[in-house]
Length: 409
Image 1 (cartoon, rainbow, N blue to C red):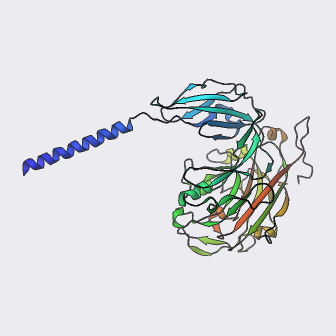
Image 2: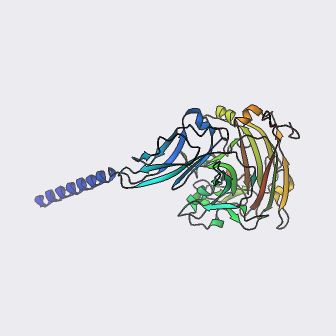
Image 3: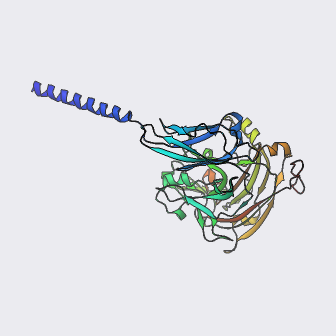
């Protein structure tokens, strides 16, 4: 009996050592990925980056129009152990360049087409272009089609939504079952953007509802729990070099429920009264904000030069806004799109020199529930938006100064 016990102990020890050894061998296997994960520019040059997009075989970095792309040093972040074997020393990007990455195990490689495109953000948005963002999830995201500076038309990923967060809770939803999606029910063109307020429930990990939204900026979960800190995931605004005068758009809005508050399980806890008007009707959000991105970075504890869900309408960095305030925000009649022109009002002067240096940022935001970021709203409320135009003040061709004529300051 004692012998059998000793044999069993030796067998168990052998199995444990074998499992541990296999685990170590597996952990130490060379990585088979050959991906470019990120690209930045060194020092102050990185401040000239407007936005970027990395696909399976391409890297597109949009920079300010005045940025010199003929002499730059990109800094690439690669898959673990991967290395660049061709194109890593290229500094002249006046034409697209190829960069070859080889995996750590040496068995796999990719050739990326790298573009540094000097451009300005467009001021007309038709929401005609959408693409599926995940091979396993059905949600789509909107993008613009612009000239990339090389005489080519490129996808500009300047619009974001909270779809990626909702996908964590309901990954099997169809495209039109996400908070934000495209629709053929448009005012003109191919599609319009459609946003709806949906129930998430306990799967939201404290985010019981999801309001549809579409905004200029980025929705990112880097370094945070998206479901528990959704306001930090919304990064509003991209650098802009014009002084907005009027926000113009077509929209319609239908409400099914008033504003409710919810607990973490998604159960209604009561009606919510707007703190300003006392009204319990849910209403949509449609606004544009111009803010000082240098000041935003200075007053943010983490030095972030963008706004998020907690301060998009309350930041001291804001210099001007255009916001929908009339009764149509509570709901429009019928299925006909309503046209709006909303002038910007400014609380301080816009410095034309700093404007030309992209030290201001623009955020445009649409949402099916105004207080949706705080998980307050009415389920089933839907907003459609199409053909948005941002009219800007004329620029003096000699000085580059934007005129303040008719801009309320």
